[in-house]
Image (cartoon, rainbow, N blue to C red; front, side):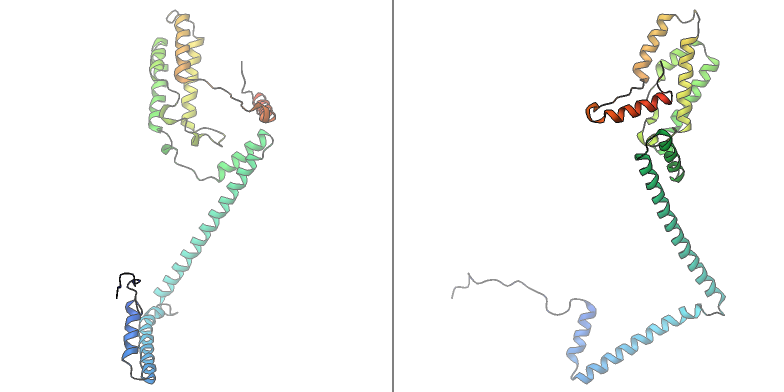
Length: 259
């Protein structure tokens, strides 16, 4: 008889696979009667309950009213659980408030409404470590150098060092996470920008034979390429024209457009 076409049967487990299940199965197989099986089960349960009782009694005795250490442990555990629950609840409430103020910022009709919502959102948002978002030490060192050159150096020294060191994204200070949805930039970045603006105005307004007008114009032209200048881009005029009008109106009212 040809058995090459017969279907093969793979190995499959029979009976329980765990150690506990196999132990119980062997006990059943070796029992000679149902009464003996019941007796074995009852004895096993009594032994298990006795072991649980022996282990639980010392733990229960800890919480006896006369045991001050047990009461102290129990109160500490309750206080920890209450504090954990309170922290979870406060975080949930803070998350809800942040979501609320973000929605208020999106639906604001005026700059005042947006500003108020942004201020409340900033108050509810946990303070982040801004040094992880940009090189704070580098910006601080450059700021100190700029101030020192303005106080001690000549006008030509100021122009020379600004031409060499001036960068728009110094230390990644243009990181969007530092500016998005915030009323103010970090204080250190603002001080750096203000110092650069002050020195640029000094170069423009200072009348001296030390620096000719042609040199000033060349310096400003080079600085514009290195440091850049702000531009307002309003795209999608066909569908977003009404929104652009509102943006421009608010910028004009807040005196952001200067000649």
